[in-house]
Image (cartoon, rainbow over all chains, first blue to last red; front, side):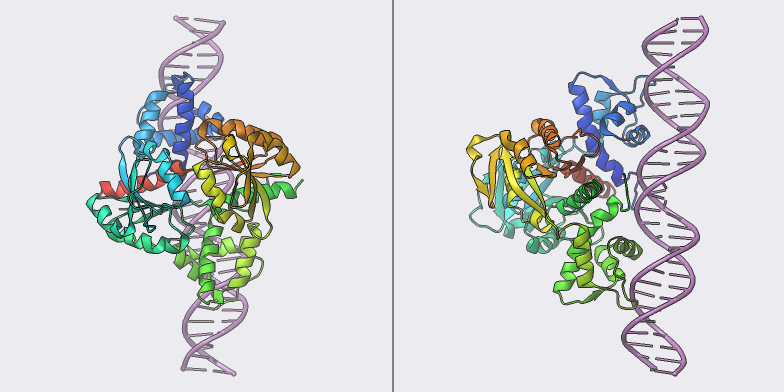
Length: 213
Length: 213
DNA sequence: AATAAATAGGTAAAATAATATCGATAAAAA
DNA sequence: TTTTTATCGATATTATTTTACCTATTTATT
């Protein structure tokens, strides 16, 4: 196990490339060079070439570049956008509701098939066509639907216990929006969407500029 | 310019440390060792020590570790949690509303002092004590309040134009929730909270596990 | 008081990631 | 047809990040 052929850094860049490529495609381009992508995104063209080489076996033509449609297909295929994974969402508060309405997941190959909360006033409601159930039914739901991924948007204090429950039920991938360092056993992956971390980077840069002017 | 003493990787870990340290503090500990932090977070203890060295001048004691209260203070100080920056939020849709209700920003030293949207039905409303104004007033507001940071939660199609406006008004740090690769001039920083990127990492890992079992 | 154990903090090494360089090749231009 | 140019793809180099190692020091133990 532990086959690691692709770095997180590359994985993070792939969706960025995709957005760029779609934009170029919609403006009528048929081919694109690594240099053009790099310039658009302020990256190094060698890096772009290497990233592409990881996910795409189709080779580019000298003097022309890569065929846009093929490249888009290859990246989307690699990222699993074309083969949808089912997932559940836990925590239908303000953020959870917003995420349920979010069309992105679908585009990124994640289909939310059920939402869960402790607030019984929500039970039976649907958001964006997704039914909201009691967390009491969570384990059963995950097992029955053979889910492997979950989106966690519960309050801080509940995050770890819900996480434990998810893991016990068979979830191995958690997209975590709660500001908590989740503890999970080997073989389970947590990906934090950490606003604090993003802010840390941003405000440090801004602070540096403000202090030096 | 371009003084880079601290890596993004370290900056990302600092809020993670903070959460861990607060947890330890609330469970009554007074001192903490780099080894203890590392074990809790599944990191390397040397990395933890180095990260601490960057942000904290107070030295730890051998055999004991670092004083928790001092360490927490130093990190929070470094990240600017103790010295609040004012910011505005643009786009009061579902996500924007959720962000306005979010207590995190305040904790992280970001005070949202105004929200903006194009939907005139929202004008004059407040969420979490924050007034919602017309985007027509955005530039003036930013200039008058001397804002340097903004949270962008508008729709994809509006992101670049709003971004341009922000930059023109004097904003140099943008926390971007829109799935768009924003183009900004030198000296302006965009930090993406990119769900697609997070999902890319997570689903690739999950896929690898599922394929190999 | 002497010894043992744990840990900071610095330095060295290793691993990883980013960037530069260069030959080959296909398209465009002369 | 020949030359020029832009780009790929591979390799080499550089920079960055992470990890390992070692010494000094402080506390606890014998």
